[in-house]
Amino acid sequence: MVRKLIRGGYVVSMDARVGAGEFDVLIEEDRIAAVAHDLAADDAEVIDARGCIVLPGLVNAHMHTWQTALRGIASNWTLPQYFRSVHAGLATLFTPDDLYIGTLAGALNQLDCGTTTLGDWCHNNPTPEHTDRAVDGLVESGLRAVFLHGSPKPDPKPGQRHFSEIEHPRAEIERLLKSRFTSREALTTLGMAILGPHYSTYEVAVHDFLLAREHGLIASMHCAGLDAKTPDGWERLAAAGLLGPNTNVVHGNNLSNHQLRLMLDRGVTFSLAPETEMLQGHGHPITGRLRDAGHAPSLGVDLESAIAGDMFTVARVALASQRALDNAAARAENGQLPFTSTLTCEDALGWITVRGAEALGLADRIGSLTPGKQADVVVLRADTLGMRPLHDPVATVVMQGSAAHVDTVLVGGAYRKRHGRLLYPHLARRLDALEASGRRIAAGLNERLATH
Ligand SMILES: [Zn+2]
Image 1: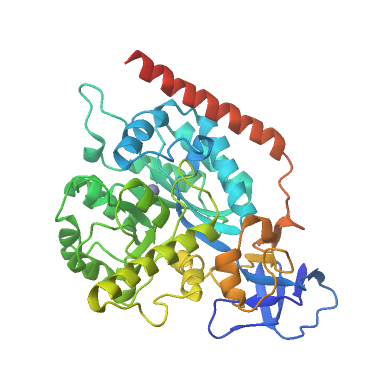
Image 2: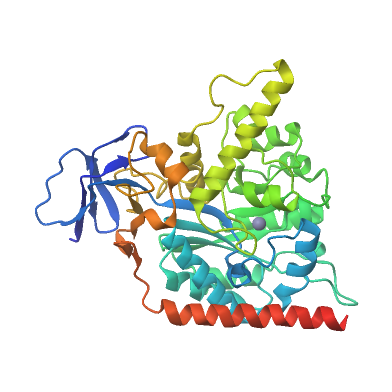
């Protein structure tokens, strides 16, 4: 049996029963075997974690990884500009190999940044070949991922139906389950990235919810931004008994308190992307509204075409944006600031670990350093210029964490990054391919804009 012992680090387990402290972590094959003081395991390979913080691998619950080659292109775009230029423009120029290289590079960057599980919300699948190449990239990266299969959103050509009227393709979900996602225990599993009532007709939403339920898949959908296609869709779906823990809603800024309550009461999970929501115009993140209802969000990068890919930044922005709202609300109410912070760094670390695991339906396998769970572990170097002294390890992780501090990343007990270096062997060549892909797609859009 392959055994690894992470020794001498400060462990933040994110499991209340295990707690936090100077523990060792014993890994047997792909699982966490024990988290305790002074573990003895003579035959184990020792990972020296003195001066380090040991934490569960981070979970990025929502990202359109296929857009990695578009980095920076959408950073100044509003949501309407993004829809027009990305979905009706750039997306249509992607070949299957563009899907592969963008997904691979984006997934590798997640590992480099300490993310071990990704909700890859892939909605640029015009052909099965595109889908297969995206899955190839994801699998090759070694990241744990739920591949959320979605449909593209081009402008309809004459005679074509608008995307909001098109049901999720059953044949493609069934093909993927038979060919690419045959085991629920595998590192990469399938989910559905559906339109949902915000972006489709009610009939399409019902079809897609039922298809996901039939196959026991997570149904994830955006809800925010432009006007809803089916404004009363959530109430109708709740009444039809179609909302549940496998329903994942992204953003949710526009939901009423009544709708939020309906959804939370049925176990619906929420994945927020505070930075893109504030930058592009979705509205204020609903982190605090979820808290007030006794819940908490998971978080995602959403768009590397607009922002950076690391989950430390995402957690920081989520925390800061909600504290700003709470502080402003308190001042408006009684002219004073709250005496204590309304949300903590511990809350924020939960959003990018255990809550992410819940949103992706993986809470029994990942999200915390709990014996029996998969050994998805991150070791952060904390004896550095940017992190010493370590007064509060959780605060240091959330507020000072970055890819530069990520020393070691394990997924299912296997190394993906070691001594600060990603172990993927062909990185330089793949980055050249990513560059070529991004340049070609951007040039294609400029050409098209020039001729219209
Ligand atoms: Zn999104």
